[in-house]
Amino acid sequence: MTGFERLRAHLVREYRRKTPSSGRIFRRAERVMIAGGSHTIRLFRPYPFFAAGAEGPRVRDVDGNDYIDYWQGHYANVLGHNPRLIRRRMAACLERGALHTGFEAGSQIDLAETLIQGLGGREAKVRFTTSGTLATMYAVMMAQGLTGRDHVLKVGGGWHGASPYLLKGVKYHAGEGFEGSESAGLLDEIVRRTLITRFNDTADLERVMAEHGGRIACFIVEPFLGVGGFLAASKDYLALARRLTSRHGIVLIFDEIISGYRFCPGGVQTLYGIRPDLTTLGKIIGGGHAVAAVVGPREMMEECETGRGGGSRVYFEGGTFSAHSEYMQAGLAMLGYLAGHAAAVYPKIAKAGERLRRGIERIFTEAGVPVRTTGDGNDVVPGSSLFMVHFPRHPRIAYDRPEDIHDADRSDLAKREKLLKLALLVNGVNVVHGGGAVSAAHGPREIEATLEAYAAAANLFKKYLD
Image (cartoon, rainbow, N blue to C red; front, side, top):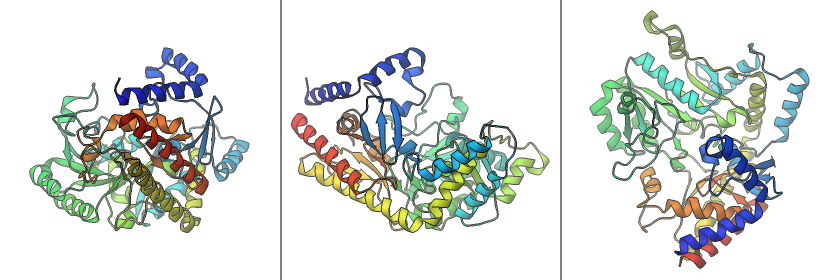
């Protein structure tokens, strides 16, 4: 056996020993659910642990193990799991009757006004839905309906949910880079009309716009790349995107599903001072509930609803549980707290993120294992609570674009996903892609314990992989 295989076998044994009840539950799940679950990213081998409860920075599994958690509800729980202020608001909702009625409620107006204020207080309108995938899908539909064009431009490595319009250019494919389709069952015509450009590459963006600008309906981009690698866009790149899309009549969409309210009490676009045409928001804005939204200028949103020039409208129906009154209340409680405590929350989580990034690099370097982290801010974003860990195959990799992170010839993905994940779990820390998101509930004790877990992992790497 190779050192990798021996370490993997050791970690699997330790994990199985700690989580026998989760193992039994998963075997039952495999009999009735695809791959044993309902969301691919939550599933890992040999099996995921099953949560029995979660509060603040920690989650407890059905075997009684506690983990310091950096997944935090798909990065949604910026205040930690089940914060008291949200529970109090939800208890009041339950007293009044919080089950779904299918009627309009005034709380959605309050949350819409809050979102508009968080994006700079412009003349705008909001439509709610229940997931980031739906928000980005509707935003693309709106752009195509408004422009009469059928090409979509996105960044290689950018994840915008499982919309058919955007399931291309997510994973790096050997020999073709980010040009591949991510799923069977997609119409070839839609895949062909989805164009890919390189993140933070101004020359490539200019090239694509020059070649295809007249056919592109929208350019959708995360100003702070999420799953693609926790990378901040440069201000020059976003400013160029704004100029080129305006010049070619292209709708500029900022996907702020992850970045919205993660760095400040609003969209990260407010730090850049660059205004897109449409913004998609989700995760944090729901306060732990299924809330997402599309926000755009009043005239654009109304034109999509009524139909351009009297023609067919974009059929943006938010879904059965869209703007659920209880969800709106949770969102209002969350965003109200962040606005009132921004001076305490955001510097705290950014400082903790910095400590983790630098501490992890130091720990692995001392163990003789090359490691790089991403998630840093830049000259616009003053700090970041996000962190992702990478194992470079070569010392001079820049780690400033998704290609560096997702190309297996540049980064050892198996080491991160198949070894580091389990090495941290058996030491009481849960991460995704080697890292995750710090919440306001993570205090100095949790950060120190997390670094100790990474140190234990680094020592295992040194022992088995040398």
